[in-house]
Image (tube, rainbow over all chains, first blue to last red; front, side):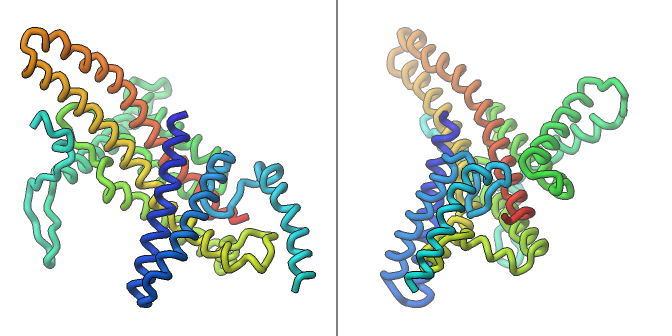
Length: 93
Length: 249
């Protein structure tokens, strides 16, 4: 629906606004131009994609909060694999 | 005037005021905010004055509004969110009345200005963050790192999660303001077509000019739906953010 499309669009724009805006502020504050902008641009784009994924997934949450009932299927699925990942990460260390 | 579809968004001072070097004039935007607040208060005060067991028309509307928001808070924010109902109700009523007043020709839509919607969204953001901090203390910061993710990814994941937390008020405000502004501009552009056609084509223009008017009739219905829907979306996201703040994980 149009509402969903508009939401996804706003989600993308907002993440880029925060990422690029934050990058410019960091550059001005620490004088690290242009590295703050570059890094924050990439992170903002990643956050945008993550939030679009979450919004489309029907969770409607921005940060890693999840609803307990939906957490059983969607959150649970992502939770069980990271447990394994953590084990591998420890082995890697 | 008719050819400038953005003229309707112009801020005009009604009572010029300056306070400590800042321009705090009472503008047409402030006027319609006051109108919205007075209408909401008036509806609820007048609607609940009779306290009839079988509600009259006004009381039905007031009860409908109350129960609608109450159900939204219960379903989306959870039972623990009951204390925050007044805030959610105020936000919904203010945004809904702002959007709906804007549908009356000749009025000013204050929700079509990003500074207004951003202030509302920032209020929600600060409030939700404070609720989370007070309820959970330092545990609040744990959800900037998704549970179970490999620790090696922390330098990437934590900034991404912080950005996606900070973008909440931005996306909340952009969505409302963009919808309202786009809709109102579109209505004005179509209305402008009619005037241009009549000016350019004369008698034929009166016939051809009826086409944009017909489109505008449909668009106004659509815009009324958008006005309601955007107030609803703003409120439902507020509810979800409050739920996040209460439950954390």
